[in-house]
Amino acid sequence: MNTHTPAALLAALLLAAPAVGTSAADAGPVVPTPATTLRLTVTGPAPATIAPSPESTAAPAPAARTVTLHCDPAGGDHPRADAACADLDASQGRVDRESDTACVLLYDPVEVRAEGVWHGRPVSFARQYGNTCELNARTGAVFAF
Image (spheres, rainbow, N blue to C red):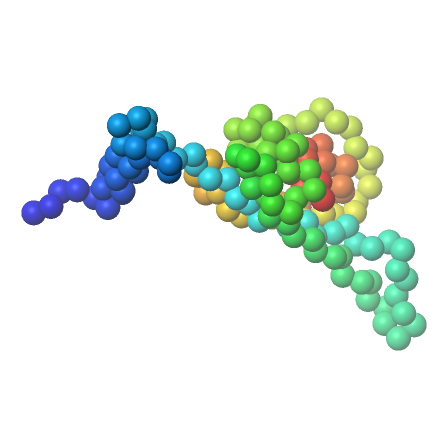
């Protein structure tokens, strides 16, 4: 009976494989860097500059924006990838954290979602904030796009 798990076999192969462009004699152990890839979505706040049409009394739905964030190295289509990755690293992968920032008590809700992995750990985060000030104070540059 084979007692080796597929993960253990893969780890042994990765550690034994030489780096590209080197021979097995001069290659040190290959330790893969855990990946960080997050799909980030911000919905809201509701557009304040668009008045409902005379035919409809419903307010327009808030627009959703989605970007991809990669870290180590920072990249993706997040406009502030370096700062977002630094914020995640500083909080050890927590998207939401405590803040001393005082925000105006204006209710203009913003919904956010983060799905993916941070340093190999699964991330699934969804929350609604009262306004963009609260969002920025609690999440830093992560949802600043």
